[in-house]
Length: 488
Image (cartoon, rainbow, N blue to C red):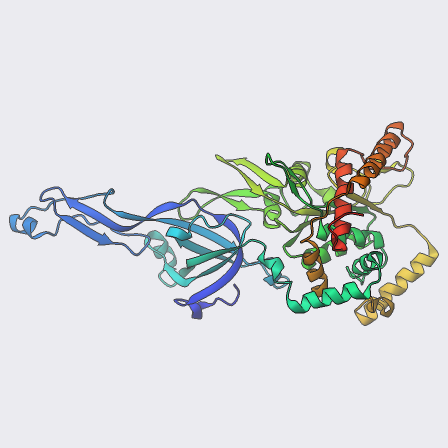
């Protein structure tokens, strides 16, 4: 979208972007038909522009001979109309240079090209780049020097999951196969892929494994009656300041296709879900998708989760379990898809974790929200001399060489192969065999019992039936990583 300049005006261009807004489909007049109320003569007027002046006087020979100025009445029934829709697209997040604001472009769709997409879809549009001069008062105010531009669409293609297929080239698949052949066991493969996520960050092996599972995800099930059980995994990183939580989030949002990064204070409830704005042309209310809608089938990383406004945080509840955003604003009642995994980072209640208090007193989040996270991590900054020395050495090495230390370098898998591996893994849909059912059920019941009797003092998880679903999702994610159809 950044390559479309003034040189391209009047020529055919092909751009890709995320739909942020769609207006309603309206009829747009192409041929106006008038009838004279004196002689019945029909006048046709072809309209190519947005604005037109209706004809007033009849120009037929009969009216001229009789010297009667017959009034023309517009015949709506005989006129020709075509469907008209305005779409606003924004450039994909992976094409925006760092520090720049994403560009937007207006698209005009006519006839069969209307109703092809909704907010949150990634589309490829082919059309002619056109100038649009200002008319009327706007022209007086700005002068005739400025023109608006828009794209007149001839074809709108919706990329359903095409962005994923672009990673599965033959070369990438060969590298994935080589990687599987090099690693003797599934555990070794899992370990190696996990270390390749932000290798510059020291330690946090468990967290990196969780982030790997988050990107792969479980299996989304759809029942016969339309009910859905989500397969996306949500992770919460709760911990002391200075243990690279934000750095991991930033890395994941740039690494995953359709990853979006927001912070708690910087995102309002409307900015996360959807806003209702007034259209500039038709003065109608239209929906504009927010961060959660735009990261559909991707990952939404929310930093400073604890500093979010309480009212804004409630918007996330529905997305995390039902995977939709329901809106009833200004007479628009609708439900938008938000099949996104949520990765959140938060600090404990007093900025640092207080060892004297119980875990649930440190974590200042409601139970309704905590139960929706499949994995919670308490990352504590404990003083330990050996650990501190190795951490400091690691950080100093990274500063000097701008890459992970050499001993890890051989194990690190490059980003392209990782992406191809994850996309390939997502094609599998593993099932849980009957003999494992009883084992999982027994473990879940045991956890419930421990929680009820209060024996598990250190536990900060609320064990609910969602915990059971979380266990199933994680085991499916592990099976996907090994390219298996059955969980073992």
